[in-house]
Amino acid sequence: MSDLKKYINERKKRDKKFAEGYDEGYEQFKVGVMLRQARESAGLTQEELARRLKTKKTAISRIENHAEDIKLSTLERVATALGKRLQVNIA
Image (cartoon, rainbow, N blue to C red):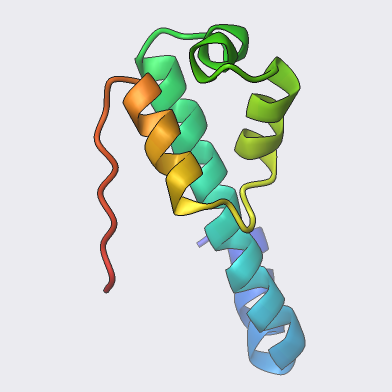
């Protein structure tokens, strides 16, 4: 385990507020990363995806970098534009 992971784990144990914020932020970060990876695997730039969605490149960047509170309908539109299918799992 890296020093950073050790620090995060120890801090999460000591600081409940940090732990809650970290976990929530990490989940939002993962959504943005997944969207970027899906776009890149489809061989599209942010600008090309924006054209398909009839929006601006800045909107795609905002979605990929700040995926908090993203609507399911938006995720579905992005998936469709990438030739993919949105699948939601509750675990």
